[in-house]
Amino acid sequence: MSQVPSLEDFERHLQQPWQLCWDEGEGVTITLVEAYEGVAMTARYHCYSAIFAQPEGLQLPQHCYRLRSPEGGEWEAMLTPIGPDEEGDRHLLQALFHVKRPKPAESLL
Image (cartoon, rainbow, N blue to C red; front, top):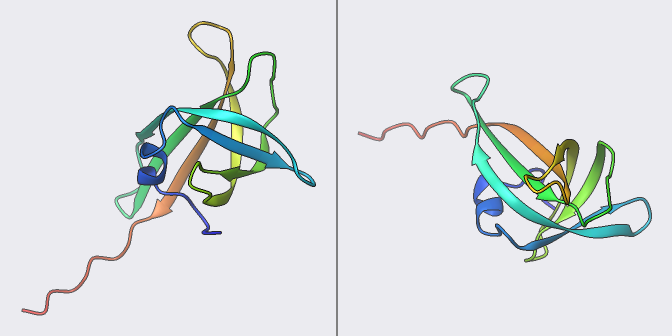
């Protein structure tokens, strides 16, 4: 299990089902509906966000969940409720990431 999924991990799996788990195996299938780059704190960081739609009738609280991609990658992530989708049928959860950018390689020239 890697520490943080990348924006590319999310973009590869838009509109696909993901597993959201908590406690001892309890979980639910959610759908990744949006992934986008955000505004970083400084140039040393990369900021991005993933938004997931919950099944109709479900409204989970903010919590640190285990998030499993369709390919089986698994991460711990804090997800926060941000309201219903545009149709008002499903509630959304957002994961927001601020990660350090890798240091640029020094030129050998």
